[in-house]
Length: 378
Image (cartoon, rainbow, N blue to C red):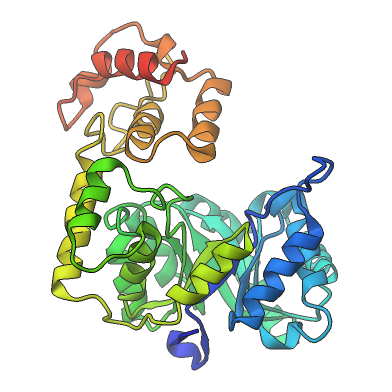
């Protein structure tokens, strides 16, 4: 296992961090998680050199922290750092923040959390956390030794990321990043900004929820033609580890074979590992994926709000994702959100307001018709 520097913190951690969000349920179907299997996977990863474990209060219907706490008995806690998170929807004042952290520590069977994150924030959630005194609470908990580092995980545009990371004294940030997300969310600009500030970056969605683990035919042809043969998973992880700003890449594993494969991959990664030819390959792979897009929607939301309630950016995002990465639980979840919120394309009355506002001059009305037909839903 390769170990990497955590920026200004002056510590090192494993390049592969085990994400504890995707463990399978029990074979009987009676539980959201197969506890014995999950404990075995966690300990297999630690025995292989993994030192960074990532969980959250809400993961796996609030059971992930419990299982991780059990896995870290018998001396395993002393071998690792734990990252867990505070969700904004469960805290409204200091007393509730204190109670939630106490509950998490109890579940994890530890007296402190190493990396404590404000969970999945954007500018709106950051302003809310400030309004209830979360930054001061985190600082106080550092002084009391209940947490070691004040951190946040982020989902939002770069401009909001820049504002948040400069608005407080952060110890670590966690962002979604992969070779397809160079201009999405915090993106490469956010990664490089954190690097300049000396703030270590932990990566989530390095495989886009598994979407990059199995290449479509046009992408696989590029991999096959390259003289060095690697799996899509290895290419994706090596591309990430090429970036020196990245401290740890999270990967959720459901099988012992996946742990074993990740341990092999992360045993040979270093900053700057990719050659110019390999970086060019990944640029070509990105372009090949993007060639599969159904519509060139950038998610700018100039078309919103729709006077008839159509979530056009959301529908086009799912449509593109299904074409790029095929239908998976993540796209199914997002599509169901749109349908449950009654924001489907069936609301469209072809008024044309969206097309008049679209800076990309997209044929939105026709696109919504095609998306509705191809996704097989309203």
